Image 1 (cartoon, rainbow, N blue to C red):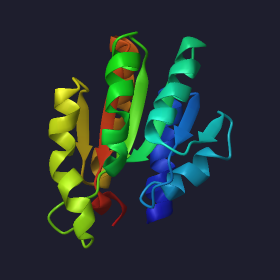
Image 2 (tube, rainbow, N blue to C red):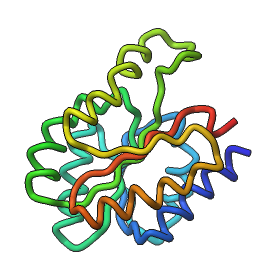
Image 3 (cartoon, rainbow, N blue to C red):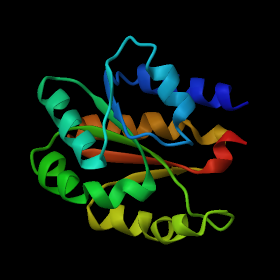
Length: 164
């Protein structure tokens, strides 16, 4: 079923006109990244989340609607770039975030950022949608449209159970 979910994610992104992507490797999003890498939009692997925000900002300045795929554990790394670059300069950016650290998280180190994710996005004035089941993937489109309409960052948090 995971391949089906990854296909749905990629179809949603393409349907909304997302035409550039960057990603920091994330186990949850690996299938979607693999599918996005088959084109037609450029997809760039970055080593840090704030680098991804910067690369996507450049794409937005060139007229693209970019997506940054990352794990929520890296959101803290890109807070300043989200606030002082995309938010300040009114650049659209869709964040597709693998949302780890919930109640059933087997890796204890994921739990602190899992508990802080929603509050961090709120503090940065980044609107977000939470997707906890495959039937809610339409929220990807809503978040992409918001990024475009509001010319700023918008996030979709994908919980692990989406792939189950």
